[in-house]
Image (cartoon, rainbow, N blue to C red; front, side, top):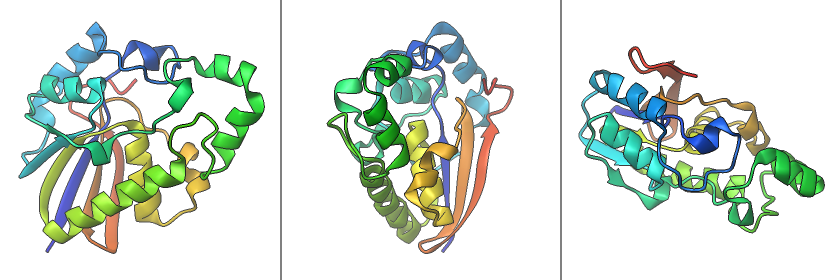
Length: 193
């Protein structure tokens, strides 16, 4: 049985535009407008999900989706770095940030590690593969990265080498244990910047 999973990255937020770790902010006006413009380009699905974050739930709503927020699809918990600018963390804790970006097992912020995220998301994807059908999920960019790491069976260190622009769709097709990946194409006329 073939499974199709379409992962949609959320629209832009002020945190994203300022290179800050997500702090639960809402979509900005431009991001919400771009999501509404892309609403007609999302495929129909038997299962529609989202990461539980504000930006993913709001993107799903702007896309016209009635998505169930799913804890398994939560992004990285960056602990005490939440809401801080990447440059500020790099200035205050350069060794910790460097370790986090280089070592998938590191969690110097007190949250979850990249490896923990990748393992959680891989379990979710494999369950989708057993169920079959089409799933659409509006998810954090790091969830898309985790899916790509799993599907391509690459080392966790490759996680940060994958860019996931806002309002792009990444598709996974196949079944448990045998997946094909189509990376980040823009949704309709939505800007991917």
